[in-house]
Amino acid sequence: MTTDNPVPVSIVIATKGRAEECAILLQWLQRQTYQPAAVTLIGVETRDLPPMDGEPGFAVARLLSPSAGSTFQRNVGLDWLVAHEYLNDERGFAIFMDDDFRPANDWIACAVETFAAHKEVVGLTGWVLGDGVKGAGLSDDEAGAFIEGTLKAEPHWTNQADLHQVQSGYGCNMAFRSIAARELRFDEALPLYGWQEDTDYTGQANRLGKTVIARRCRGVHLGSKRARTSGVRFGYSQIANPLRIADRGNMGRKRALKFVARALAANIVNTVRRRPDVDYSGRLRGNMIAVSDLLRRRCRPARILELES
Image 1 (cartoon, rainbow, N blue to C red):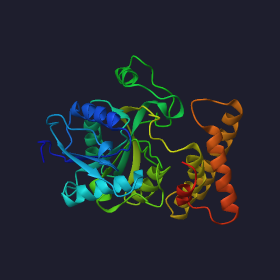
Image 2 (image 1 turned 90 degrees about the vertical axis):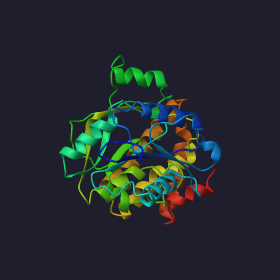
Image 3 (image 1 turned 135 degrees about the vertical axis):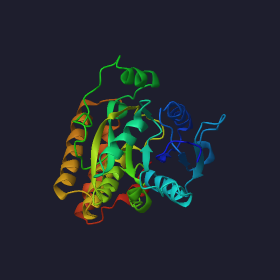
Image 4 (image 1 turned 30 degrees about the horizontal axis):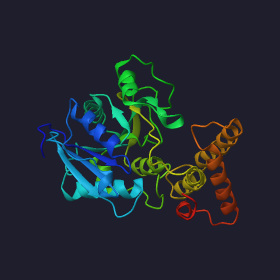
C-alpha cells in the first residue's frame, strides 16, 4: 500500500466510453485530504481507461471486465481488492464512485470519521449538492462552485439529516465496510446500466448493519450523457429491475411498485411535454414493452440485451 493512513480505503470506479471523465475524477481524488490506499478502474476496452501520467500517490489498478455493465465491472474491482488483501482490515471500507462524480476534498476523511464513530453503520452515502442526471448535465466548473458554496445546493433526496437511515445508498457515491465489500457482490442479472443496482447491494448490506446519509461527505454528480444506455433499454429496466430486486428480498414489494408507478407517470408526462434533454418517449416505449412482458410472465432484466441499443 502506498499510503500511511491507518484506515485502508479503496475506491471502485466502473467506466465505459468516458476515459476523459475518469481522468478528471482521478485528479479530484489526488486532492483528497485523506488519501485512498488503492483505486481500481474497471473498463471493458483499453480505451475506456485513462492513461496514467506520473504517480498519483496511491495504487491504481487498471482492469478490464469480460462483460460490459456496472454490476459486472464493479464486481471485477471488488474481486481484485479481495485478491490483493485491501479489504482484510475490518476498519477499512470500499467506496463506489461513478466516473462523473466529483467529491469535496474531505469526502474520504469524513467517511473515515463516520465509520469510526458509528460501529452500527455498515454503509453510507453522501450529500449530493447538484445532480445533472435529470437534466442536461453539469460541468466540472459547476461542480466546484457547488462544493465551494458559490452555487446553492439543489433539492435532492440525499439532503437529509446526518446519519438518517436510508434503504439505499446512491450509487454515484457510496461506501461499505470491508465486512460487506469482501463478501457481497452486485447482481449481475441487472445488465448494462444496472438500474437500481445500488438498492440491491444496499439491501444485502443492511442485513449486517444500517446504511445512512453522511451529510459531511459532499459532492456533485455531473450526470454525463456520454455512453448512456438507450431510452428504450433504460425504460425497460425501470420496470424489470425493481421487480427483480424485490424478488431477491432486497427491496420491499410496495417500494418496487412505487418505483414502477413513478417511472410510468414521469415518462408519460415528459413525453407529452416533449422535453429534449432526455429520451422520455424511448423510456416510455421501454416501459410498455416491460409491462407487456410482465403480463406474459417473461419480464426479466436481461431482456434489454435483446432490445434496440
